[in-house]
Amino acid sequence: MRNSIVGGAPDLSSYVKERIKISANDGSGDVLQAAVNRPYQASTKPMVILIHGLTGCEDSYHILVTANALLELGHPVLRLNLRGAGPSRMTCRGHYHSGLSADLSTVIDYLCSHKKAEQILLMGFSLGGNLLLKCLAEHGGDRRIRAAVAVCPPVDLKIAQQRIMSRRNWLYHRYLLSRMKSGVQGSDLVKGTNLEWLQSIRTVYDFDNTVVAPNNGFTNAEDYYFRSSSLPLLDAIEVPTLIIHPQDDPWVPTQPIIDRNWSRATAITLLSPRFGGHIGSHGVGDKIPWYVDCAVRFFQHHKT
View 1 (cartoon, rainbow, N blue to C red):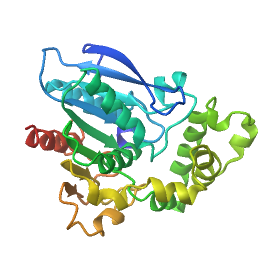
View 2 (spheres, one colour):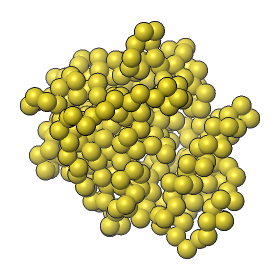
View 3 (cartoon, rainbow, N blue to C red):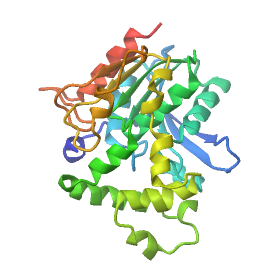
View 4 (spheres, rainbow, N blue to C red):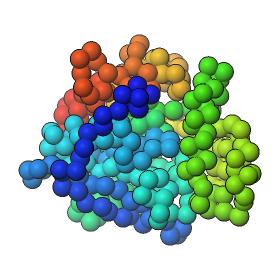
């Protein structure tokens, strides 16, 4: 929230930019869109795929500030718009959700098969972080992926839903729900329904239960949360992965990852400082969020 209020996202217009379109591999006809930025000088460094959070897109503050930092270090960056988000909204009838890890797999396959990238680094934020972790667990030891970073991932979606709907978060809950409704207007998720019905939804839980779940093969919201949460899958991750999650995150509880047994999740490093909020973490005097510096250091450590 601090970042949204302060603003000042970097301008990437001076970097070489390519717009790419990637067909979803599920017969839907949906086409994902992404912005690829490349550094001024030719580079052999791995491409970094950035995955936004709920109601975000390629131009979200956390995406732009992270992309700028990585570009300055010589990394090409792909700013992915998940299905139905940002520019992808114009080429998709469906809409992303926290468990739609198959779309990230499709993007990775496309980049490697079309020689856009040989080695890949991944970084996901909030919902994008959970989706990323789920994808890593399903990929096993994919040699194309060198390392990954997840920032404030809701690894237990049920607990995250309960926190967002708590009394202390009523203002954010109302704001988030409004953006969720706006995001699906015109998509197949609400095709054939009237806007009055959509606007009558009063909670994130009801939205997940009546919009997300039935349109994505889930029985209900509880089934969606259970099958899409990455928490039970973390032990299967083999790619070096850093999870950054401040303990004072007001919207996504850290307890599920702090309390779990980490003895078998040998590929994961957990960084959970006392303070930092939700995708904020500005150090004193720093112009960029602290999580960006942590991610860069982690990527550099796993560059070979």
